[in-house]
Image (cartoon, rainbow, N blue to C red; front, side, top):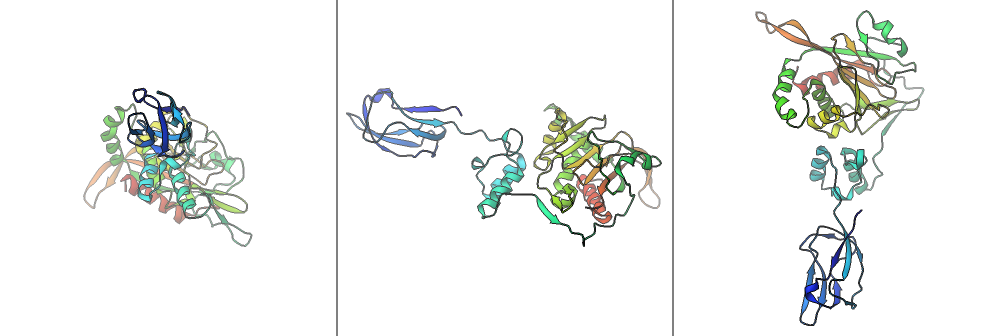
Length: 358
């Protein structure tokens, strides 16, 4: 880190350093008194005249100091990169963000880093994924829905009802997959995106149903932790960070790191960036051009959420009123060893409520 200096003002002339008023590691502001010095005329208290942290004292108390000499070195304050959610959580929990080391891209501090600091302050270890132990006596949940096994045969087995879009990292192991689907009228979501269009465009971004879906789902992950889980032979691993493999309608893929820490604008910014390495993904959320298209989970993930394109369809409002709605299918394909049908449907219903498309 670039260091700067604190000097004895030349106008004071030669002086004796009487006392340091700050120690190495102390924070500085322009008004912070750092030292007392004695000149031929008077005793002076020197202010820091800078923001930063004192890193080195170059003069010992009692030493004679020439006019303009360097007394100490300081480091400018560290520029913190913090997600909006992490900043709000730190304020509520009383965590000093300057004491944290971010684990996100370019050292960005996220939700998981704040929670880790809370656990450390309470005397526990650093935040780790939760391990839900499995044994030979505990059978995986009985899948309910459309069972697809093995995964490499997804396209053939589902050809009659859906087209499966395979992400860049295809599943190669034999796992039991099941699915759940809700038909929703996405006109409220389309109106919401249209209302945000100008605000997003001013920042060079685009308000899309996919961005809204990722934001809604990520906000629900803490209430539905198995959506962000992974299966191993000995445990179900529930992860505390949410890295979303986002499938765009045009077939491109993006990794949204720490999606739970981002606002909808932050997610839109991540969708516009060229980050298509999905190896760190913990779940899949995709939007497709066809209402019949679905996406399976990635290796090491438990679920894939798909929002299909909408098609016009009559919707009965009551016994006498019918309108034409924009009907899309919100589907989740899941590892039936981790999730069951009631859990998948509960997640879909909560996503619908979060999006306002009930």
